Length: 394
Image 1 (cartoon, one colour):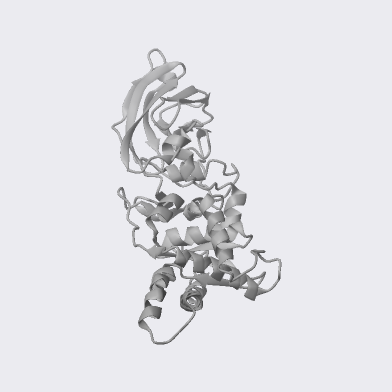
Image 2: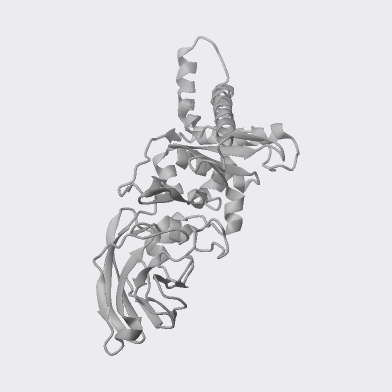
């Protein structure tokens, strides 16, 4: 990939081509997996339909044969220009056999990446990081250099890759934060159910997105969704660590929809992608905002105004406790009205906190990779697919 160098992972194989020493010379090659011998199901599934010319995905340059966005392949030295090369990747639990062949156009380090046919259903069911062997065979001018195997780490589908720093070169950073948009699943049945329940609260009569042209009505639609998510008992949970962290590969644990709904818990990313999915469903324009160690939601009120929403404050109100307060109180009040009052108080505070954080972060967008504004609609246009819990047959 542009500006990238890979760690070997295994000792080199010396290939002496019989009878063709002057043509092929000494060939050293290694199988390699990007990034850092790790396979991220989130990257494979989420970016499966990313457009080849997309600038968000780093590509291989230089002396390269095969898939410009490939993550499974090999690098070789000592192959002369004009040589015919073939790289074969053997089938394993998550990928089918792959093959790439071509003719080298230049001397020097050659990289090869076949187009891999992934077993997406298997990837979607990976819930624990495990080792996986990837075996390859390199042939030069019809002569095999022998099979070679690299043991990679197969990450869980919940591990979202968001950045890669080349070892020893901190300025060589590849941003993958757009992959968080893959966890926004606006097609999940939970979204439709949530909207139905939000209408039942009578806070709004319909969800018409921006059709009214009134920012206050847009805000009220978002509050109705916030309100019903609080009624569902969604709580903040600081589950962010992953089991296979490395210094050069940055990732974040993100629950899939089914997991968050079942557990009624969400970390800052989980809550943001949940709410973003519902907002997209009603035609609003959500953005995911990343700052160091945190994420929150932003959305447009109209063509000129964007506000932030601190989703971790959703659990600040205990709406279930309203009935207990009414029973203990000598004052009579409408419990539904009281629930809405307490919900609005947290919503208003979350707006204030999120909007202030958005203003502060906006000064560093496009300058600091720790501060990103991820447009979910733009990610969809680029081909970033939602990661579906049902893909794995669950």
